[in-house]
Image (tube, rainbow, N blue to C red; front, side, top):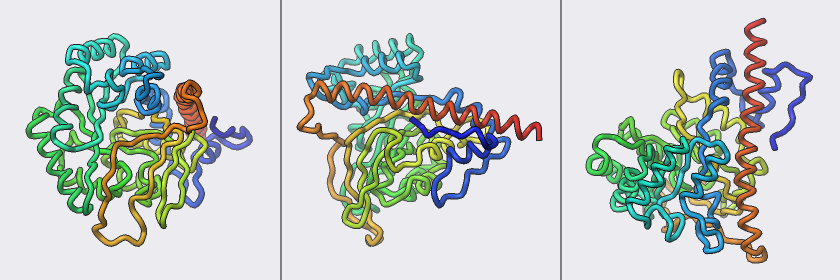
Length: 360
């Protein structure tokens, strides 16, 4: 769980201590910021994600499909589900019929939940498939990312062309919010270049709390670059490991890694002057997921990105699958509790600090 907070100092000092990061200036917490933290920690839109249930949804022993994610989200009191198009084998959203997807959409509405759909590409055919699926589900959001190899400049140009074609041919009425994720190979400034060039209010960025490690960026520095365009978030933790002069990420249980999650969450909650800018915080626990370094401090100006496949987590061979499945479920529940504990602390301290400021 999150670190205990001493009651010996004022609430603002204790809040600053909760959000402190070594060698980083403290967050500006004036009265408007404190009000935002009070309001937005109370009703932050938390979603479950399909990846924390990777083995549940990719093995016969797990046997899960997207409907099980709805059950988990409802049991945990979350606001929605982010599900990858291809996760779940024969029960995946990509495989089941349109009628079955519509039934999943109806069940989500009955449970008061929202669907977000994800695809690991900006390729037109894959975007067409995910758009049809999102329509069946009555989803509100589609996430994608460029998964090309070759020079970075070519990847950026291809992604821009893909997303323009998406808007013109697949979603001309802007029914869906399209979020583009920084998925381990493009830097924050390159991601901003994509959305700035598109200049489409319905195409924004999804900020993942660990993926910028492999582009040799620190998370807070990456958020400072991406912040104006971020509307959705993946929450997870990771160890930062040296790798050939760059950094690899080894994902771990939330709160045990090197990511300053409390500070990141506070900054993300504060985005948006009048209304919250971030529409979904997806809890994406990925214990033992590993990704190598893709970018390096001494690279040339237009480096080549090697070919890569979908994200995958290898099972530890010495652990039986029933144990892996039990751990996976427990880790997902624990991440929900961890996040609620953190937001509860933020909420309480911000409310106390605001009261102290008003009475001063």
